[in-house]
Image (cartoon, rainbow, N blue to C red; front, side, top):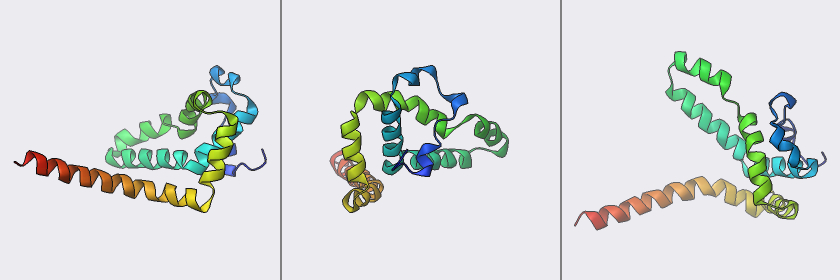
Length: 130
């Protein structure tokens, strides 16, 4: 579909698409996949899987890599996104997250979350140190 990155268009292999996805319209699937792509959901999942695999021994990692598939998880999440957002909302989110401000927000979120946790922990330590 037009406007969808190559990373998003390859997410629906026919052999792993559950029957439940047939209720999501093709136009909405395309928007959901584009949103997942621009929001960084797939990239985040892949990074999390890599971190998990790095913690496993090679004997444990090999079989896990054969069964864990980010695209399959995204396919499972399509109905969740379908129920949560309208097509118009997805279009507006995509528009925002592809803007300079949206990209800056996406880039800033991990650091903001980390610093927020650190600040909260310091606060809690001062409260319970008494």
